[in-house]
Image (cartoon, rainbow, N blue to C red; front, side):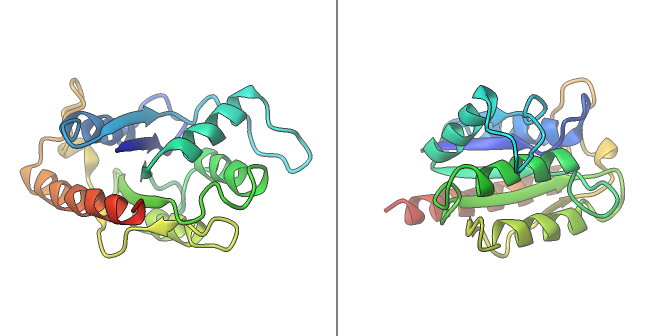
Length: 182
């Protein structure tokens, strides 16, 4: 099973990068998980053609069995860079890039709500007619107060309750991806 763990921000420092890297490391015995950054992607424009970086992004998404998106919350929604990266998939890659692609969503934020609004927003985008992704239902990973839950030096998720919750979500996602790819 090949999964992508997408860092949903172009910020140079992000707890969501730590989360994506933690997922890739912790579950490496269950799947091949590649952490994908969006910081080098050209901003979406309906009038521009996809450059080589965007074409590679689209191919990586096409070739993945499933995707985990880790998103922060900026002003009660997802970062513009994440929205732009998704727009390339829906508008330039054709209707089948995300269609029924298994996706899990998780997020960390400095605030107490753990990116809840951003996660609601991205689920709506992923379920839209242009995307039609197969989003894992009923599994929310809302990591609030992120600085207290990660080791800033190593990037490790240190909060045992959150790790246990993440273990449950990822176990469900592995089954979800297997079922979807039968």
